[in-house]
Image (cartoon, rainbow, N blue to C red; front, side, top):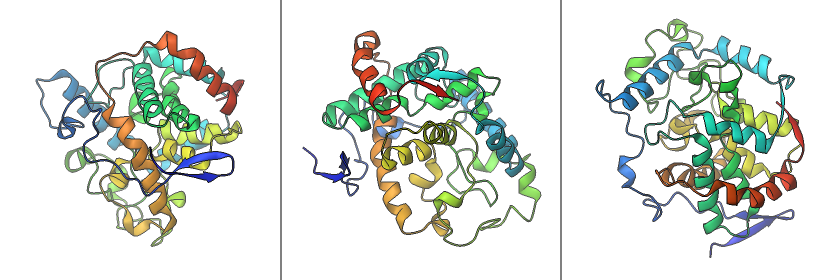
Length: 293
């Protein structure tokens, strides 16, 4: 059993625990996950490539500012968290090379594995269940390329470890703007993670929505949600020159979550209907009622 430490009344996993090199629960070798090789004859790989090309073409500083302005008024629709998650039954993530199944399946795969490893930490289990709930944006007139996929910093040069970096940014206008295309761009050295403008997607949206709706989830859960798709940073090592010391602990939390987000992906479908009663209780505990989105 892992060592835990208390923060308030919530049991918190020791952040010294990092991503295991080969989780025992992975259904295939870890090197076979996140395969972004280009193959025009593979429909899934081609779908993924096209999604990222659109993302990397259109996600600019101006675009992200406009989306923040639009979506953080939280006056677009109202849903319970359960109803938002149920909508994911009709969403297949066009950026994901590992699975071609509804996102709700991935949500329960993640949550249930966390529940197995951390049976006493219900906040962590619920984080696994809801981490992709922000993808409901795809049902409200947003294309998937600004909802799903890895995120990256806008307003400075693109990180070396962004997928398809060398081919997909050629038509992004920020790349020709000397204000945005340098190492630091609009940022100052070691300005800190919280001061970066990251490409718009379900992570940032859900993070802000939960705060707006006064969630009782702990800060560590909110960090996992906000940065779980920020692969160039948490797994690639990019943007270290923009970090502060406290961001290192955030990275440890995100990496601890990431093993469950990534390596639980498989074709095995949990018995979702039988699991709902358990998770409904957690939703009621941490994110109750009808929420403003």
